[in-house]
Image (cartoon, rainbow, N blue to C red):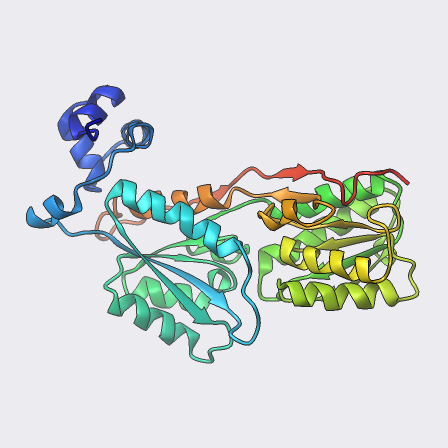
Length: 345
């Protein structure tokens, strides 16, 4: 079967060949409706830009840096960044861009200079930032001064004033979990938070508390521990919460990796899940379905978010001297109920 051509894309989109070329080359003054038509056709056909031909023609290849944080002294988050990277990589291939991934030490004291230097060395035109870098206003300003366009993933409210952002409504996600568990009859909760610098994840706790209030409870019904999104921290925090005097019957974790650790803590304590203690996570990563019992969690479309970030950066640049309003897109999430919380008390 022959590979699809630019003419095939034009025919499927119902536009001229020249219009497809303008979209794929990220030329300015392209209507958003036209861009969406062409990109949908590209995606449906599996069309790939001939990078070699483009370079021979003298066109500049768009370079995008995906920057995420890691604590080099602990295990990484198992899926969050890899899912974003997969979506971004596929979109970059489709749009003829080059994606460079950088893992930066979370504890680097000169993190702003480090990240700006990496992106400049790679001659990146744009950057995708994940938490907590997505909430570092000094970094956002420095990248703006360097002329590097930015899309922030799961950023807090302040970043949304400075840069394009993509993410779910984390407060609502926490609210959905709280309402689910309170509706099952739970009255004593343990909450395992993530990194304090991850502002959107922090808002999950705020939403959870709001759900308790709406269910006739208050914040005295929950005790919490601070984790760092890793399996080990989930295990350690859950062990402390289960050993406390509060009589916890539900453990809520800010991501799936920590929830998997909480499951192990409950198993080691000889507790039945969910009869003795319910456990929930967030992200709906593959680990949520392979642990026992499978985790109740919140699905956020990470691959789609990674792809969308690349699409934004591949779009037209703002006119010189002009200002383009920042885009803050809230992506739909979904509560996924599985066996770790399913049985009513």
